Amino acid sequence: MFYDKKAPELIQLEKSYDDGIINKDEYSAQKAILKEKYSFVGFTNVRRFLYAIGLPVALFVSSLLILLSTFIKHRLIIYAIRCMSIPFVITGAYFITWTLWDRQDFPESIYYTTITLLSIVITAILYYIFKIISKDFNKLETLRQQLNPLKRNIDFVSDLADIIPETSETVSYKAMTSVTSEDLKENLGKIEETLND
Image (tube, rainbow, N blue to C red):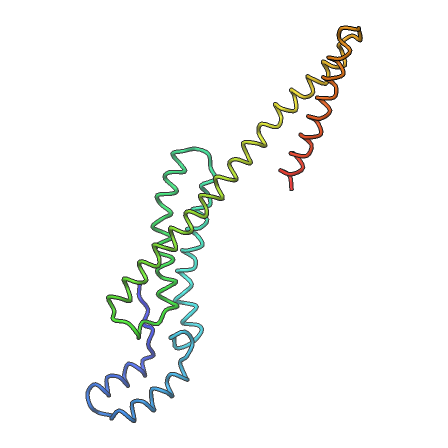
């Protein structure tokens, strides 16, 4: 699946120089002309670049979507999706890096090792970012689910304050219950407003 990043003319020019058909000055001059002619990220034209990067970008985006789907609560599904998404992210990051990075400055083994390590690092960083986001999202969702029972309890305390008879023995308790339920309603309203923003 590796695409040839060198223009055919450049390959032929290098072969001519290696075979001794042209000298160093001719090689340098023709190489400068070819570099100007084929200068889009090491590809012969934008169309080839888009062709080469299209599949890796699609793979990378798809893998991110799979990774984001870990918001699902079922543990077995979460584990399966997580296990499947990590190799996809590594592969996508690898091919995007391979497409954008011209390897002419490095030996081939260092080039591929560096890209592989970079892909793994990018994947680890993305994994931990999504893990933090997912953890915070799950906490907020748990808080949101607990609001309805809390609202019922507040309404119960409020209703209790309304039905307590006003006698000398219960006046202070009724006042305290009424003030407490109003404070709780106000605090609950603020929490709901914050969660809905």
